[in-house]
Every structure is written in structure tokens, then in C-alpha cells.
Length: 333
Ligand SMILES: [Mn+2]
Image (cartoon, rainbow, N blue to C red; front, top):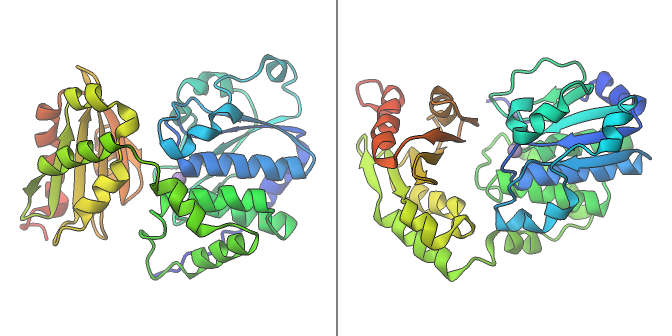
């Protein structure tokens, strides 16, 4: 098992920082804490280097823990930037391709670009990019870049880096024995002034009463397949109308289902509109859910992936169950 290491920062990346005076920083649509933490930490660092930065996100800022950062982000490239295109560099963070930036994508074409990412589905080969798919979060890579260039992180940068790392690792729960370097990175963030207890409370506290009722419904609809190795559940359109998206606590639902003995993978289908569903996949250890999501047009990581798809939950669920057969049916394993 290869340990997770600090990735080498390409010289072209450092050059990219030095040769531009202004940076557009954009992450994936439907941003999460890693996407937002990466964008803001990188922006703070570039400002420390005397650069101008513009934070971009197509939104929506649905997750309660990131809502406070929405005012820092713009959904459009400002007109004055479009005009001054010389000297403007684009940095795509925590995002496997320009198309994943959502409605921003069209406006971003034409700018010189680099990618800083950790998604397994990222196959870009752009010089100066740093794509390290073993990294537990994009912030881990951003921290490596900041420390390589300047020696240390500031407290404000550290806050955002720790927030992103905790989001993508489920507060360190998803890390395995290859992760010593990740904890060393985290230790330096605490040294820089981060309060881990406060970050935990910010990510996991503040949930509404309704969110627990919705959670109970998702749990009550669980169905086991492949001798309990796969658990599926769903949210109905009525749930959506009653509780709204802001009462979803998907991470907690996955956490509780993962605690069931013998579970290797989870699929939760949410009927978002009459015609479309959002789908979340999670796995423990061996099952690669990014392959399953990709086969339906989605994306993500080996152990966490998702997609947005046309269809009704009751029709889609059997197809997703079927897609797990190569990885879970006892004939194969
Ligand atoms: Mn991420």
C-alpha cells in the first residue's frame, strides 16, 4: 500500500502564479466544503503574493456549512476581467473538468488554465496542473502548494484548509493507514491556530428538527441487496416538498447506514423534481462507486460519487442495484 505523500509542485504551476497578476478561481457546481475551502484558501494565499483574485461558483450553496461563504463568490466573470484578459489566469480547483463548473463553463473558455484536483475522474493533461487522485481533499494539495512556495500557512488560510479536509474525509473517518502525511498536514493547520472542536461543531451542528425526521424516513425505507452488502433507500418528491433541500443531511444518513454490519455500498436516490433525481453512492473499502456513477453519466471518487439523472426513483433504483452486480454478486466475489 503506497502512502499518501505531499505531491511535488510542478515548476510550471509556480510560473503560472508568477506570470499572472489576476486569477479567476472556480470549483465544481453544487459546491461542498472542500471546494469552497480550497477556493478561499488559494485566494487568500494569492492575495498574500500581491495578486488580485475573483472567486467564482455556479452554486447553489445548499449545504448549511458553506452558506456563510456565498457572498464571497460570483456566478459570473466580471465584465472588467473579460476586457482585460491579458494577465488573467484561471485556476480550477476540486473539479475534474470545465464542464463540471456548471453555468460558469461557457464564460471560462479562452483563459489560460491550470487544474488543482484530486478526483479520480480527472484526466486533464494541462501543463502546470497538479492532479493527485490519492489526495483525500483538494485542500491537502493546496496546503502543499502554499507550504512549498511560502513555507507556512496563515491562520485564515489554515481555517479554510482544515474545513475542506474535514469535509472530504468525514472528519478523518475515511482515512486509512496510508494517511500519516495527512495528519501531519492537519497538525500544522492546528499549529497555525485552527480549533478542531469548533470546526466539527460547525460541520455537524446546527441541524434542524425536520432534518432528523427526514433522516428517519430514509432509514425506514432501506432495502438490502446482495446479502446486505448493498443498502439502497430513497427520498420522495413529497419529502422534498415538505422538508426542502436544506433539511437533507446526506452525510449523516450514509454514516448511519455504513454502521450496519456487512455493508459495502450504499445508494440513496432522491426524487428532486417530477422528472429528475439526484443520486448518491458511498462505499467502504473494495467497491468502486465512481465507476457506477460514471456508467450513468455522473462522477466522483472510488468511495463517494453521485449523479443527476432523468427518471423516477422507482424505475432508477433497480437499474442502480443491477449496476452493482459485477462488484457485489457472490458469483464474482
Ligand atoms: Mn474534494
